[in-house]
Length: 202
Image (cartoon, rainbow, N blue to C red; front, side):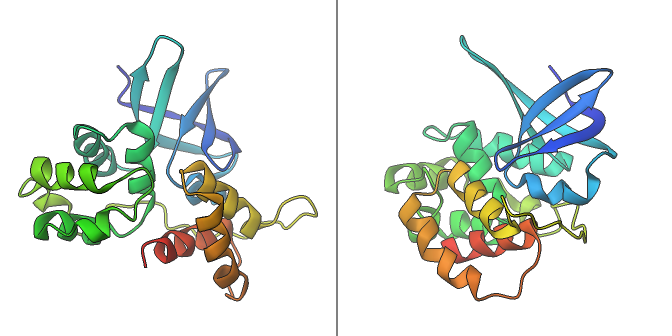
């Protein structure tokens, strides 16, 4: 089982990054791959969780050990798979999620993609009182300031919208936040995606 991989970021897509290590490119799914935009072609350490299925070997990546630990707690809940766990982790508001679990706030939790009322109730049942160490927002490493080139094919906004769909939000939900994002003064994919995730939770 891998704990982390140190390598060079060679590709960033809406759903994953490619991390090259000794000539091997590892495809690593992340909640917000664009947090690593400023690290393109640079060496980084990514903490990983490996999931082995009959048809695939999958890697899920995190920038800190705490992020990885929180993800593992989430996927221990019946009804939350790795994809749903990653979508929940993509949102910066870890404190909001922890507080919702502690207070039994089902309404807040069902706003995450892939989380219905039954799963939200299971999250509360399984995790209430067990997430105290995660009740702060500095778990996320990599608040990088980066310029992003705007091309005719893709813009930071379109990349962010694609990333929201990759996380499991419906086209209708993405369309709803797109209108608000278009009027914002944001410039990078990471900024658009973070704001989009916040809007999804309103």
